[in-house]
Length: 105
Ligand code: SF4
Image 1 (tube, rainbow, N blue to C red):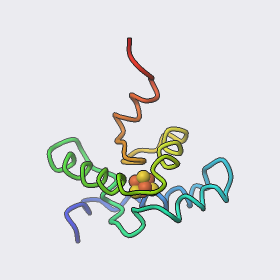
Image 2 (image 1 turned 90 degrees about the horizontal axis):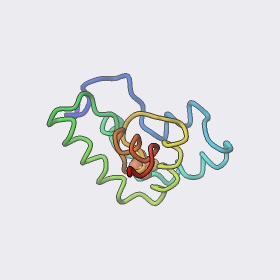
Image 3 (image 1 turned 120 degrees about the vertical axis):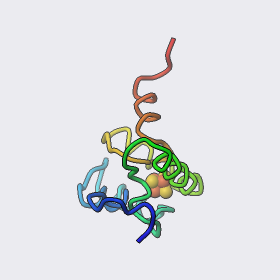
Image 4 (image 1 turned 60 degrees about the vertical axis):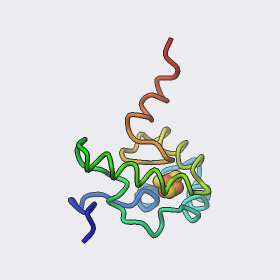
């Protein structure tokens, strides 16, 4: 069991998307998920629990996977549109909330 498998309630990002059937169209979602760099990663990595140093380290590792992902832009748009929790498109929850609010004055 890896360090990140503290809980078992989470799914790998692309698998969650597949199960929910969310996206502009089914084929669009299928296409970008199949190119995801996280396909072979531990699903728990993208869903940190808590906000301490372990969770922060987990988030950074997840983001490093995202930085190598060919579909990072599609993934970010999907997460912003659906309000999913966890690391998606190289962004954590707080960063997506900031993007939704837009630039501050
Ligand atoms: S951007 Fe990150 S979470 Fe999204 S599909 Fe790529 S590796 Fe997975």
